[in-house]
Image 1 (cartoon, rainbow, N blue to C red):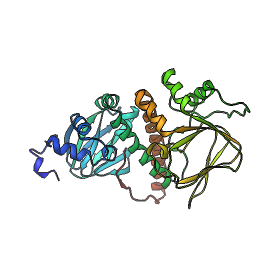
Image 2 (image 1 turned 90 degrees about the horizontal axis):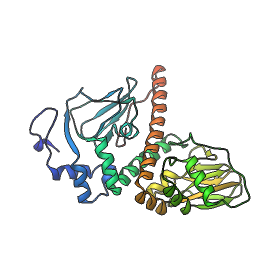
Image 3 (image 1 turned 180 degrees about the vertical axis):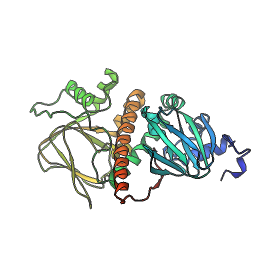
Image 4 (image 1 turned 120 degrees about the vertical axis):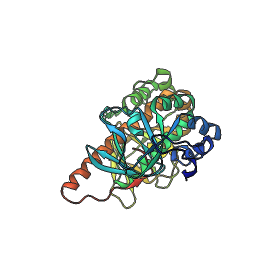
Length: 333
């Protein structure tokens, strides 16, 4: 695809601005961007060429620039062991760049590979100036997380550390109560009080008895629920059920991308829930970009943790001779 645009074989190649924008539009996070937004994004990218066997990212230091793979194939490694293989339309080092993980990331070109290299600070500045680009990246990450969740049998792929003891109360929750639970259970501990109040004012308190449905499988996901008290059971088709307790947000990935629910959710016990509506939440994100950035980093951190756990399982499997082949993905690493 880029043969005519290569002017020399080395660390850099030259791709025309128009072709660069067209390439970016093929990436999952950027398909919905306007021509003007693509042009702004294209302006911060640097074309790079990596011969087979060369290193894109060295482990042991925070990722200061990540790569969007245009052509070729990249092998990701974890503690020296191969994990994912990333093909065209994949992000290499994007998660580590978002989280500023001090371990960095390790990536090696398997084939001759062309990438667009983007400085992480430049990307963050772009997020702060253009909400649509930030939202596109968030949705692409969430979709990858959702696919991972389905393939691995459910459960949480982000968060999970900030859980709390449930609150059983017959009294309706006040605005202050809602703010307290949103801050305690989510990624919004450092956001402004004003932004937190706006988030809390948009949620709906929901109380259900044991056995009552929350949503059916296949329903369009226009909200998630934060569990204040009780246990929610999730019932996917052809999979074992899984459940969440106080402090977890259930249905978050589906609600961000607005896809049909891939599992039914029911109240396993009496529950107190906070419904977080997608449209209202996105409005708060756009008005308070730090809220969206905080969520994006939390999602990236949680997903990185799950990928690390998967890599450890693959390493253990390889020692017993049961490891399967690595997959070439369209996701993020």
